[in-house]
View 1 (cartoon, rainbow, N blue to C red):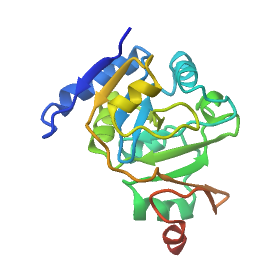
View 2: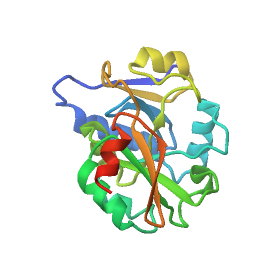
View 3: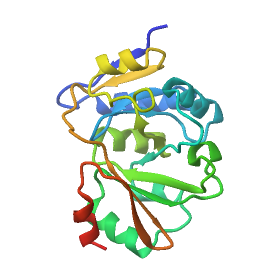
View 4: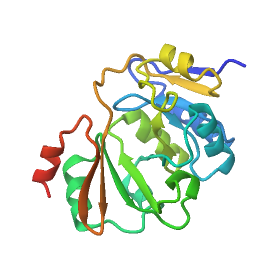
Length: 210
C-alpha cells in the first residue's frame, strides 16, 4: 500500500489541519516522515511498543542504537528526562529551539527500546514550526530519527523518503529541505559535556557556552 501523502502549503496555512491529521495517525500507531529543521525525520508515538518496533523495522536499525525524540515545548522535556544538569540548561538557553540534540538521563517511563538500554535519551526542541505544531497537537514528544535506512544518507525530499522507506505509513510533504548537516548531538551526564556527533552547530561554539 502506498503511503498517505499530506501536502503542506508554502504559506503554512493548512499546518494546523495537517498537525491534527498527523496526530490522529500517530495515535493509531502509524509511522510517518515529516520535515524537520535539518532533514526528514521518522515520527511515531515513542510510548507505543508497536509503533517503535515498526520504526526499527522500516529503518533496519540495530536494537543497540537509541532513537532521539523531538519536543514542541519545554514542558514535554520533563515527560522523558530525569533531570536537567546546569550545563544542559546553559545549552538549552543558547541553542533551543534549534538543531542541537542533548542526551539526558531518561525517566524510567521511557521505553528501553528507545534508549537501547542505556537509560539515557537524546532530545531536541526543534526550531521547525512544523515539528513544534505536531508535538503540541499530539501533546507528547515524537521520535525524530532520520527518515532513511540506517547508515544511509538522510532524505531531503519525499522522493528520497519513498526510495528509502516505501512502506512508511504517511509522509508530510514540506518540500525540498536545504540543510547540509544533521543536528549536533552532545551528552550531558553528571554535568559533563561529551560530543557524540558534530553536525550543523560546531562543537567549538557549544564549548564556549560551557
